[in-house]
Image (cartoon, rainbow, N blue to C red; front, side, top):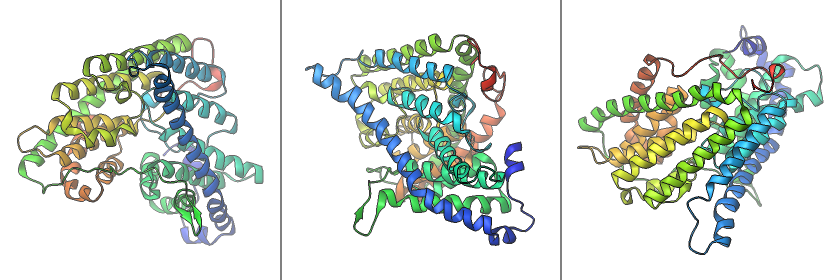
Length: 454
C-alpha cells in the first residue's frame, strides 16, 4: 500500500462508525450514480478500440487487396503506433500512465485531471494500432480519474478519504466492464493495491456498488436492452478431466516454465527502457517497426494471420482454444516466441496493461504441453494461463481466478493443478533476480520531462 493510500484511507478503528457516517453514505449514493456513466465510458473506449482495429487491419486491406491481407500490412501501422504513442508521452502532461514494464499497478491515489487526456490518447494509439498490451491498466486510470474529477467538480475541498473511495469505485466500474465480473475486478484491484482488513470493506463496498449498477449498461433493465457484455469465459471449452498424478506433476513444470518466460519478457521490457528514454519518439517508432516485422514473419512462416501476434490477445484467445487441434507444435512454438518478443518490446515503451498478453501466451504454452504424457487440454491451458499471469502480475489469487474463470464450469475441476502452477510460478518469480536495469520504480516525474528523459 502506497504512502498516499495510507494517508487517504479511511480510519479503521471503528469501521461501523465510518459506515454510519453521512459522508460515507453519500459516497455510496454517488458511487451508484457514477457507476453507469463510467461503465458506459469504459465500454465506449473498448468498442472504439475494437472498431479501429477491425477497420484498419481487416476491412481496409480486404477492400484494397483481392488476394487476402498481405503480411506486410501491419508494419506501417505499428510504426505510426510508435510515433503517436511516443509523441503523446513526450508532450502531454504526466507520463500517460505508469510503464507496464514494472508490472500491474493499482492504487496510489486518483489520476490527476490534467493527465487524463494523455492516458486516453496513449492507450488508444497503443491498443488500436497493434501493440501487444491490454486495456485493463488504462481503464483503471480512466475510471478512477473520472470519478475523482466528478468529486472535485461537486466539492473542490473534498477530503482525501472521499477522493480515494470514489476513485476506487470508478476503477472498479471500469475494469469490471472489461472482465465482465465485478467480483473479479474487485480481486484484481484490491490484491494489486494491497488493501486489507477493515479498510478493504470500506473501500470495496462503493466499488462493488458502482460496478454492479454499472453492469446495467450491458445487461439492460426491464424493456431497455443492454449493450452486451465483454465476457472472460471461453465459448468453446475443452472437456475437463479429473486431476491425476501426471497432471499435478506437470503443474510443477508449467509453473517453473511460466516464471522463466515471464522473467525473459520483463527483461526485454526493462532492458530497453533506458534506450527509449534517450529518444522517445525515434525508439518507440523503431520498436513498433520490429513488432510489425515480427507479426509479418509469423504470417509468412506459419500461414496464419498476423493478428495472432498483435493486440492483447483477448479476442484471439477463444478462437485459438477452439481450434487448438489445428496447430502443430512448431507453429505453437513460433507463435509463443513471436508473441513473447512483441510483448516484451511493447512493455518497454507503450501504454497498456500486462494481463491479456500473459493469458494468451499461457494458453499457447498449455496447448503445446497438451501432447505431454498424461496431460489433458483443459488443465494444460489453465496451468499455462495461471503460471504466466502469476509471473507477470505477481498476484497469485487473481492469477488463479483468471485461469479458472476462463474455463467456465470446468475451471472448478482444474483448480488443483492451476493452484500448484500459480504457486510454483509465484515462488520462482520472486526467487529470480530482478531483470534489467532498475533506475526507479516509476517513470520520471512530469516536471522532470526533457527532450531525452521522458
